[in-house]
Length: 275
Image (tube, rainbow, N blue to C red; front, side):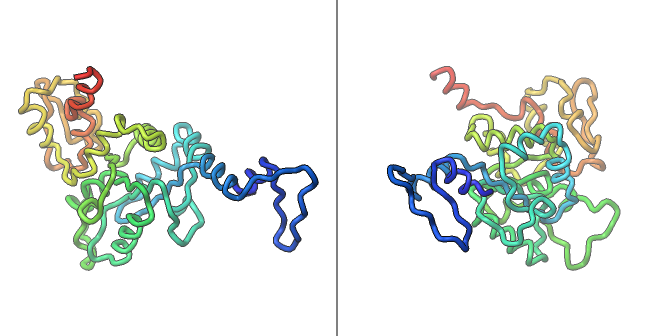
């Protein structure tokens, strides 16, 4: 039974099969108007989430769909998955509240270019989901010892072509950050999302960002979060400071974004203090 049908039944409006005539209301009964039904449906509708896969390994969607212990409540009760390869049996892209876009976009792939533009039209918010979508990551900076197809040679982060509202970096992102980000988007918690919003325009990421923006600014506290977060083990701690192995770094940006000293919410702090 559809959400509209459930609400009609709750409000006392009889639903009828297509081949039956509508039954007149009994004397004294007052039914809700169609406008009231639509209003209640809108208030009770779940956020509509879509997943779009471009040029990537599908590791990000595996973090989304295969971590049932963390994401089960979110995926089954808090949102509706309305579009996505393997996630929904839908061919035409519908309107969405949030689109999670995995993978960079290949300039030689006309289908991917068209799909990316369509996502921007159909989704209220577009999220660069994973480091390939956010910075290009492997597809842009590393080929893993293999040559790319001759007709698939130029890959860009999606923010180089469309407006992106927020980014969830990682290769792949952790289930915890996926859940927290989507819940914050649902609740409209812009303070929590501010770091993700700031990342939307950062289409380059590198371990050297730690040296330039954290260590050189005397902000590093030697906590080792960058080394622990690096998914290719490209960051080591030497004498209490991060040291990046350029041969291992795939420029996913996760080390910098996970650093507790890389984002300083100055405006929010002033707001909280009433300054």
